[in-house]
Image 1 (cartoon, rainbow, N blue to C red):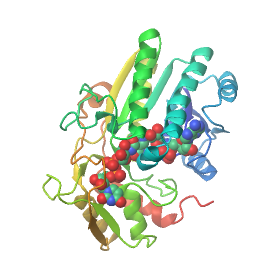
Image 2: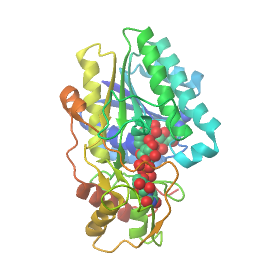
Image 3: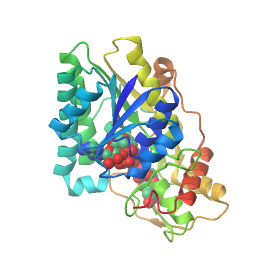
Length: 340
Ligand code: NAD
Ligand code: WQD
């Protein structure tokens, strides 16, 4: 199938494009490179062993997007494009609503006009908020808003897709709620390339390992967990990428309507366990200091992944050790990410 991938030059998008190419799909990327580099597209081509078409374009640009859709006529869309920094979304809520919700509205309009009926959307475990205790199931009650504007954009987009699917019985949407994606392609050629100081745990730790940061700041060790640090469901980005390929198979089978799946491992690891695993993978201590809690962090979050296993035939295979080894290989081979 020809898949149009918005945000395909980004962290999760690039790994997914490689998996799609390897599975025989044709890939067209639309990315404005606001948080990624053109080198990522080159490396997707290298690892996928095939060409991909790349449009440097903003998904909010309706005219340009319409032209791309009319020219390419994709069979399905995977919509990764979006801004994702939790703290920045608190500072700049309008940018987040305009970009994340706006791009989705434009995309759906153009899909409707050009007869494209299949979309996979990048949602997030953040939509669960703190309403229910883990393991989190897809049918859990969702809050009205998340703990930050970024998370609320995901809740809003999920609702828009549900309403649109309700109005169009031939429209198919698969909402994938990612837990905590980490790791990199095992080649070390593509990986996570955050700009500035990393917000997330794994990219921060690997920068400590290569000497770009002095020490890790652990946000709180007084949570009600066995070692006092927060627990998350870390999932290898290549497992996550394969989850998208599995979701696309639903479209090949016919009309699937709107479906929601968690993509996680179903297993939680504490911050201290992650630090230990990275330290073992790196063969060196990871210096750290305990700080106060970070606003908005939940003590514990992990998925119930049974639905994806039953209906997509997908489950995560890689271990925390794989995630650490692959993230480190990427960082060591590319200490400055993709460069300028
Ligand atoms: P990323 O920033 O690496 O990739 C997003 C890509 O989208 C970037 O290449 C960026 O340039 C592009 N983009 C952003 N706005 C655009 C626009 N208007 N038009 C065209 N391109 C645009 O992020 P990622 O980690 O790969 O995340 C991909 C998706 O998954 C995002 O929607 C994110 O919210 C979601 N998600 C990520 C995580 C995570 O922890 N990484 C967890 C849950 C959900
Ligand atoms: C994990 C744990 C931190 C950095 C975020 C988004 C979520 C989703 C995934 C997009 C927490 C601790 C972190 C550091 C630390 N993204 N930590 N020191 O917060 O679970 O999820 O990314 O949808 O929406 O909120 O991930 O990697 O930031 O944090 O101690 O320097 O590591 O407190 O307990 P989080 P994270």
